[in-house]
Image (cartoon, rainbow, N blue to C red):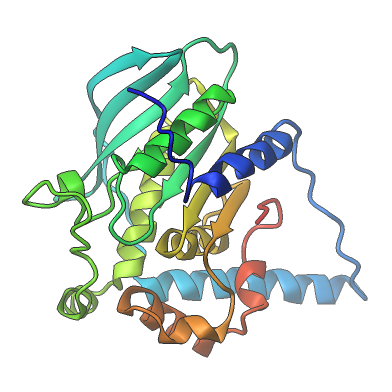
Length: 275
């Protein structure tokens, strides 16, 4: 394993690692929000909770969870970084291969970042491999999972297949009761379930980071996942311009806009999360 000499497309992850370290180094305290009275605060909290639940239902996020049944597929060490290979069950019939990068020598529990990928990317993409090594050298763990339709989750085993892009795939997913974005987000939530089974992970300092489609997934995670402390949303926009993008982002955003305005979307996340 060698650190890539091509830092293009990954500078944002390396730079944001410093942000994550700074934020993760101290406990997050909820900020006081000035409100006119207690009833206004109650209305705000009620709106936040009901909107979050409506968005989860719209995406088709399952409410019942199966056993993770994680299996180790070995590990290797190079240049002070350990890469563990794992596979876990997101839901019946859906197994998720992943790599966990961590520093070889560290005392105490580690903060962790979970990658959310852009179109065609997966756990073995060179730029994400590079970024994962950067995080590990900074003392963080980093979890890289294969999105559905990519790499080990594709019958061909190919990288960059974009198998979840075609419109017929989205139409079949919706007929089955879930948008494709819902599946991508749910698998990431299950990755957090996996991380929380580990004794070496600080469960109070879990974040996500993504670019492009990965930025869209990170924004949904920030809105819906109460266990996150940080989300790095890059190459994405909280704007109606995203209503005319690819099918996987266009449809959920169009339906989200029927439920709320853009300023409300990030505000439905738990108050301790940071974007």
